[in-house]
Length: 325
Length: 299
Image (tube, rainbow over all chains, first blue to last red; front, side, top):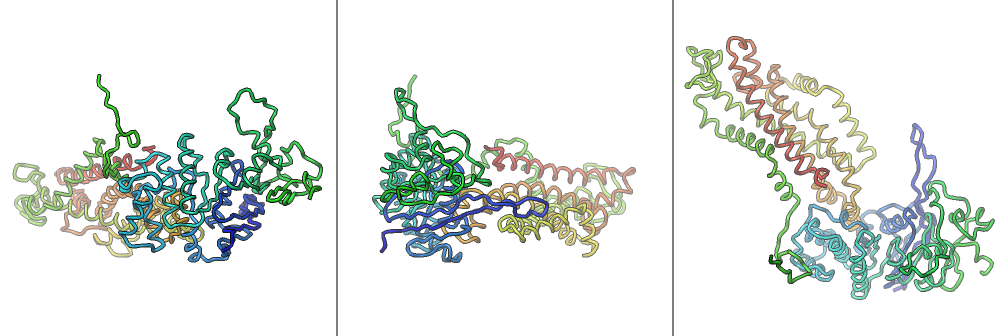
């Protein structure tokens, strides 16, 4: 069994822009542009970035909930982009997703029992009694009670619903869980509860996570390695400790600088990101970040930097470090 | 003042037993509070009872002609008077409820089932499926509906059954469009994406997730459409394209009474009132259902 559970290479998603009377294609929104990374078994890979940087699109493409335009996704030795619908449905037993909005991701007309039982029914796992038993078990694993099974989603709070969403993802005993901003819709006090739950579950069931978020604090708390995305591209990826202590890419520096520090005496000479995110339908030439970069050089406006290993296990896409390779 | 302390802060105020409140129960609770809706429902139930028990309530049959008693005004013997054949109008109106409600329910059922199926396919699959179905609806809606119904009856031949089929057909696009637009919004919901993520087949997603969440406006429309269907059936019968003599269809009774309007207005008044009350009942009930089921009102 190889150590790498998921390998993504040159993943792209272009959404066509159409216009004119005949709806001709006049361009592309490059939502995800040439993203490559891998995830080892049992680890948590965090993916961070601003809104609209393509992190959710990437997550959904891994499950082919959005069809990739190009690229390969190798999960557990299988090339997912080449599977047909039936084969892909079977794979989904092993790759599950936790969604962002706990108010929208549960069918309002189904009871919790029906919601949790469904993955088992779909994948033909167990008879009715076994399924019911597992529903009760999983409810208790995520910190709810068996008697909650007969209730409807609207009878729960946001945090409780997200626990139900997590329980649903765990029902089929998946290998990989893609958590798409699982705590960003929750109150801060509930966030840490849910994060701790995710960590406990990982230890208990040996899960692998891809954790998508825009909150660096949350990602630091849970990830072994972190990838930073900007405008559809992966700009830096490394271990959590290296990223937070010694960021290489100016964008990562700026992101870290924008995390508020709850201490009024700390001086504010940190890098603060200025300017707006460029239009993804018309991204800047060269390095996508050069319009907002403090260390912008001439080459940045012309040539797009490639993701390269600058230090061991520390990849960044930036011209600043090219001489050092 | 005494304050009761909650000893179990984990689950405040929640008894530890099944207390499931389904969205349908919630809708019923809000429906129950709506006075007009309850009045409407009572009217509808009243007419349903009349339809069921007509043979037991009616003092005479639908076609018992007593020539000596032609065109008698309402009296204690003939509550609603008699018509030009000496038939008891009260009895005929009672039996008429059977026909009108039957036509209303059946035609709406037909258009609801067909319209829902087509609409859900158009909305969920999109692309050419949507183009074909939606353009067909557009063409059907381009005709005034009663004209289309007349055309269909003209082709099939005038009878109550064919009028029913015609009414069912002309109402299909209304249901189809309604559910199509609802499906378009429901299929973007995260729980539908989640259903795909779980590994569900399209058929299961459609019938277990999309359909139940798209039904609320169809139920409302269905109730209101029964009212319209009753009027349309009456209109077709009035034009001589629906019920045949001696069937006591309310629209047919109106049409038969037309030449008698000045000398015996009761021949027209009572069937007309019956139509009006039934339609009013269904409309009030439908409005109440809309308030109770429409999520936009709720949130």
